[in-house]
Length: 534
Image (cartoon, rainbow, N blue to C red; front, side):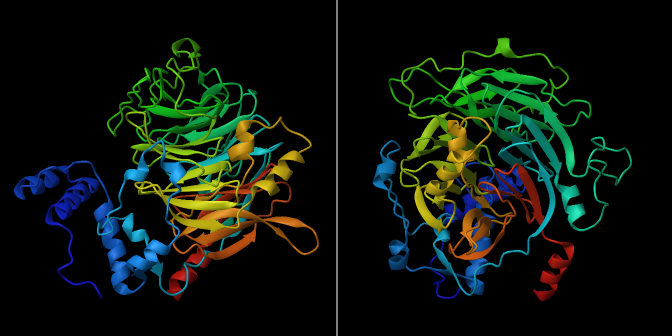
């Protein structure tokens, strides 16, 4: 590698641990055990990790000149210092960062040489709507389905492949009033709308797909979490539900599928076993806290689905929603909950602008970032695929990239929708439900999303076209440099638009207060053209 002496190498045992973890990641557990035994390696874990492959990839980019490491002085001058106020609860101010360590988190401090990564040529495709404000949109972990929820008490489940087919003219324009599905392969009687779900249960705040992709959970203002089986063509209502004692604002499944974490208007985290519906509450970890949480996890846990044949209520199987211990660690309603891909951590955002990281198996708060967005509300959270970073957006009009191990802000992305702009939009709403904590939090503000390859961060901004007409723009930043690399009209004309990106292909969905959602993809011809140019 140019400029790096051959003697500057990682410690032997560190490399061997990375090799063992990478072999586990590639599903070679017996080979990993043989390597550990043959090399006399001690103090190692057999947990899978892709870190070695990530380091090799970044090293190859540095060697080729595509990326350049910053020197120590420049790295120190970057905006990576963490607010001391954000470290009080977690004790992060006592953690010293070893500048000589070689980790994926360290290598983010690079400058990209040459131009920023170009934005793919996104083209607008299928458009659908709700009869009211759209409060939530989520895409399934496998990228096959998306789901939207509206304050019209309905959920639309969308087929991502069909929307891409329509964009590329592979199928005919869908019929508007046809049944949910036809029986002929290749025919899409209802277009991308795979299923419409109705429960007439009030405002829906958030949605989460089960890892199987065929169970969808929704959380409601009426204090319930409801489960829908989208594989059953005749079922349009929930087959089970969990009652809570507070409005439920956000939910996320564990990757194993057996557990679900929820944030409510109460200040304590809930974790539910979705088979028994037993409720756990999070522990503050202090000596005065009498509540404890033990949530078994892991890939071997049974997936939710064994009880999908019943529509019986589970109301009698759930303990009281309020925690039984002393005053909770949290001080405000939990408006957003998001789980890391490996299921080891989850993140929460509270109405007071605090972000917290949690040990997903022990229910212990491991890190607290107060004033994550300068005291403004935090409006969205998204983990990177590696789990090393967390992307947040806030009502201060910025998105921020955090290193989760240290709690440092690595990059800020400026120009998203600001608090003043959106607060005015919320106040101007003439119809719909009264604003709730969730509406004024995640649902009422712009959100930030990683692009499918994590090269870009996507968000929204309001632009004046010079005639006094304000339009909502989708804006893209280079994830590494923070530079704006592109923007385009979201085509939403009322309220503030938001954006969600597939993590499997260059595809987006935008949605807004106009009740409309729109698919954006890259045409086959554009993909082939880009490949030819390369």
